[in-house]
Length: 130
Ligand code: THU
Image (cartoon, rainbow, N blue to C red):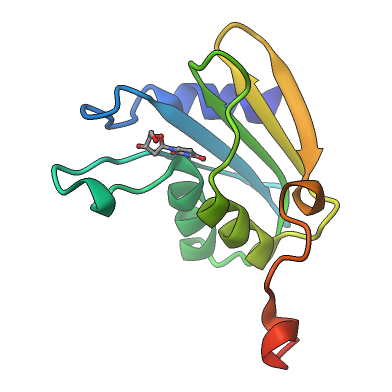
């Protein structure tokens, strides 16, 4: 699967010397193009950033504001689950029905919609700007 393959490839560049947990993320944008990101940790632990956040930054920097599909991969005991903060960041640019594909290096894959992962997401509508 193309998106998961892209996530696996970028995971190789993850900088995770503290947790040892490398993560790769790939996001398909409205244009059809794929943007990728990996986690980047820091000696000041809270300053580290998630793979999904990096991929989202690349998508926005390329001038896109819509996502249609997301893939995340790590070497965990089961498919990697996006953290709460990243669910909220993804919800800024993706509709509730967007599939989030979660994988392991051993080939286990689980898919859930963004809405199932973050029901009742805070959005621009809550601000009266949607
Ligand atoms: N991490 C991600 O990159 N994405 C997630 O959705 C979950 C966690 C990273 C953050 C940290 O560098 C490492 O995984 C361990 O928490």
